Length: 99
Image (cartoon, rainbow, N blue to C red):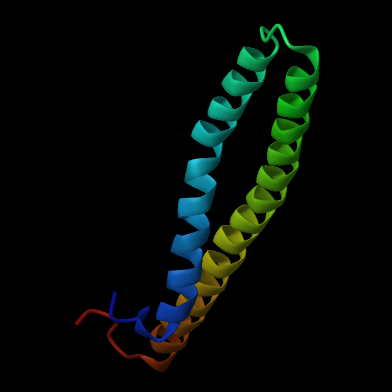
């Protein structure tokens, strides 16, 4: 953990991306269930409005999902690369990495 201390801003963004990514499947399930529920509406105009609204939710969730997964993988990748570099530098310099 001490070796990863300089990358804490990357960790915060990566964790935020992880939270967004983790919320995607339950949110998709809720929107799908609401979409299916709206098909049983007797008023055709109201049904069309609801389905149009839920389709826009799907588009928005898709964009948010892309951003969440990108943030998670990109920023955790930066953290991992920097940590590997730091450990290798210490190993080749003959320094102990155990604190």
